[in-house]
Length: 83
Image 1 (cartoon, rainbow, N blue to C red):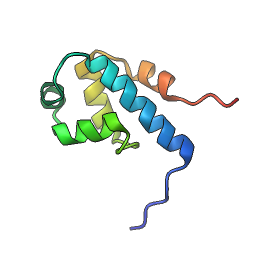
Image 2: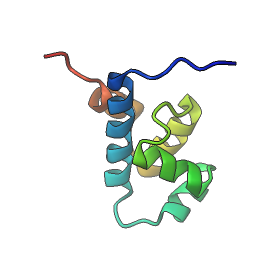
Image 3: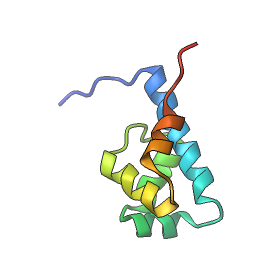
Image 4: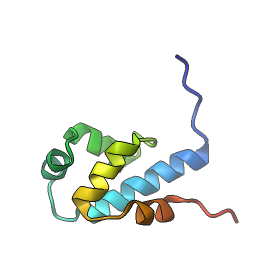
């Protein structure tokens, strides 16, 4: 299966999501948050650094729940507003 390359906007959205999740994680360790969300620390690291700019919905939902964020809040902050 060939994956369509991501657009610059999609990459930026993924980086924005990563920054939001990292900020919400605060002082908690990556290992702790990943374990509570049921994902690997490596997956969380990739999301936070933008190396996984299109994580699965249920992964994002699990992280949001673990970090006390609403999906609406995350989605609203990740949408790029055209200028």
